[in-house]
Length: 296
Image 1 (tube, helix red, strand yellow):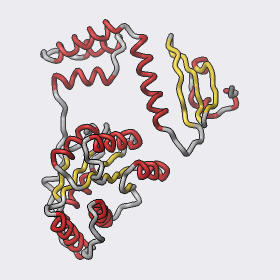
Image 2 (tube, helix red, strand yellow):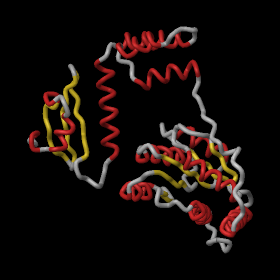
Image 3 (tube, one colour):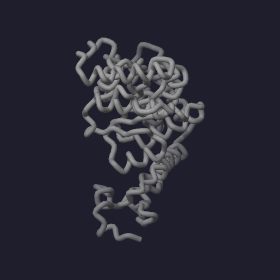
Image 4 (cartoon, one colour):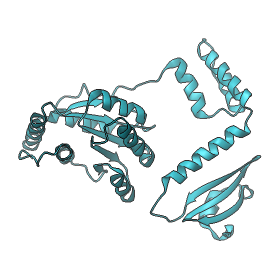
């Protein structure tokens, strides 16, 4: 049992409610903290100093907290509150009273937003890609276009690039720059906007028959979302389609993603977009058994 007063991490975790932490233990490089919130007793795992991060444990934590919360609430009251929220959403009334009733009944944010989506649908922000003027052809862009064209000719059709932003990340500027440069280089680009689910990305890959998939994630959830996409692709018979990932990704996470099957990981230090595109072309060629392009 660790001494709470000697552990800075736990002091930070405890914050203003020292009586909420009931017990602390170390296990496999994790701090296992038993916490009490009102009448709910939960066990949290927090990383100590373990570079071999087991993200499944963190996912178990989130799922465990959610299961405990739902088990402790009045299920009938939560279901009724959601029904009333849906009903109110279909009428021209203030949704705040129904929302407050959901909060009091223990409805989760996900359940609340899902109920609203059932009525209103989901907003898709314009990507801004279609209206962007093509870049001026320079020597490097010309060589890039030649490499894309050569690869497409060898594969029998124009190269197709699916770019997806899974999760709740709404920062699309970087992804759109990649999408625009890929289009200017000669790729056929499939970009459907922000906040896609892994299942939606997999479905698009199947429907569009793409040569390569790019995932842009700036929310920090890359270790959860990317494996979900990889599993979905494998289940759909597209496990041989290369996947590249871009975002603010620590080196240890990048190594783990590559070990899981990601072809390349790009971070803010990879700011030369043409170089990124050349590498993506090389990845497509390698995945299809082609030798390096002479145009590159």
